Length: 271
Ligand code: ATP
Image 1 (tube, helix red, strand yellow):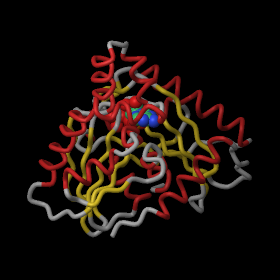
Image 2 (cartoon, helix red, strand yellow; image 1 turned 90 degrees about the horizontal axis):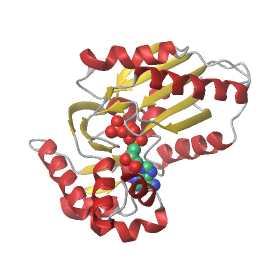
Image 3 (cartoon, protein in one colour; image 1 turned 30 degrees about the horizontal axis):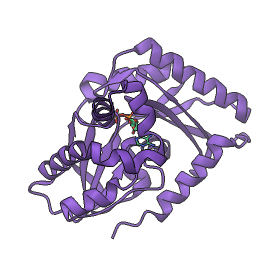
Image 4 (tube, helix red, strand yellow; image 1 turned 30 degrees about the vertical axis):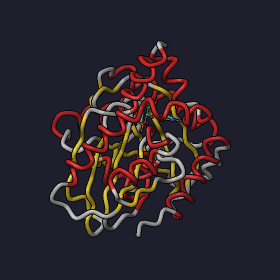
């Protein structure tokens, strides 16, 4: 059975240091940079894999896993880096980045270039599910990463990613459905969606999108013997999504305490 206690411990520590960064104290620090459709996240771990600091910012620089605003991405990463360096009193330079699987030849270089143009030395480029599993430590199961623009499913056997699939359905589609139903702008729908107090109310509206995501999961798992799912990505923050997925798929489904921070922490942990 998949246990997420250890993942939750590191995520909770990370959430604490986002609010109150620790001093770097001269240790070697590793930064995981996650360039997403909706957010750019920087997670900094020390050499013992303890979270030191972290930051994130909403950004519109990546679409469908591709960097579409290079200069914008560099600017944000540079700013987050400088802010963190000031807070911890130490320079950050060793970094890793992650890319959606299968985009190595198209975008791997671009994401790396963004980090380097922002002043990092990139020591590792890894694929997102492998990064996520550095934190989740799943031996057998599937990770479903429901991000802003896409849902990525990876099947893990004996601790290794054996299959990946990425489809264009994600949080943005939830916002589009809410906007349509409530006759509000996408921006307002986005705000509504991120308000945990409103999750119960919006759940029935977004259920068709969740069902679409479930059909994507089922397609990805065809031919694989998978008993358990773990949901990650910002859209997995939607209250009750794991219970619904479990009921519909018949597969035990869980999510870590903050599914948005798994990949950036995993990138840093892989360094
Ligand atoms: P992608 O994986 O598609 O490249 P990303 O890495 O930017 O995108 P994440 O940061 O994992 O994606 O998730 C972003 C999504 O999470 C956005 O659609 C955002 O609206 C959604 N989200 C953020 N907070 C919440 C919340 N509290 N409830 C529901 N959805 C949320």
